[in-house]
Image (cartoon, rainbow, N blue to C red; front, side, top):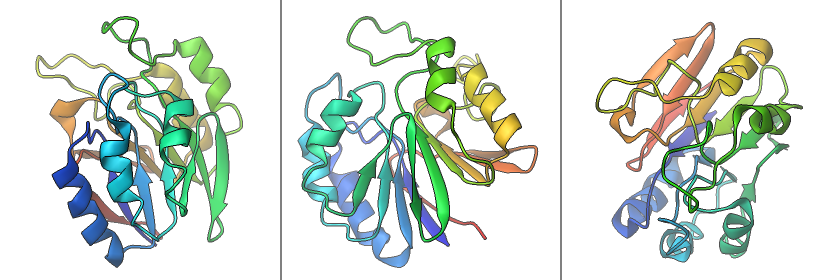
Length: 200
C-alpha cells in the first residue's frame, strides 16, 4: 500500500493544500502531529485536510493535545485520531502515540510525556503493524541542528520489541524527510511537504 506521510504543519496552509493534492495517489494518509502551534490555529490546516477522502491516521504533536486534535478533526470524516490506542485499515494494524517524548524544554504549553508515561501509551502496540508517533525513536531520525539526539528510548524499545513494518514520526525539524532502518523496521521523519512510501 502507498502511504502519504507528513508531520509538523504548524498552521502552514500551503503545505496542507499540497497534501490534499498528492493524497489522491495513495491508499492511506498518516499525519504525525503538530497541526497547531502552541495550541493555536489547529483548524487552519485541518479544515483544508478534511477534503482528503482516503483513510487517514493522525496523532497529536506537542503543539496540540489529543482532545484538541479530536475536536479539530471532527469534520475530517475519513480521519482517525490515535493516542495510546490503535485501529485497523485494510487489514493493517496501526498504533498511535502523540506528544513530545521525552519531555521537551519548551515549558508548560508543550504536550509532553516522560518515558514511563510513554511506555504505558505504547503498551498494546501490535507486532508487524505501523506505528505513528510524533517523537522519533532515540538515535534514528532525531538529530537536532547541533547534532544532539532528541528521540525517545521508550519508543525505540517498543520498535525493537514489536518490530513494526514502518514507523512515521516528526518533531525534530532538522531531520525532516530522513529515513533509516532500525533492524528490519523503516523509520521516517516525515516533515510538512509529505513523503510517499510504499510498504508491502
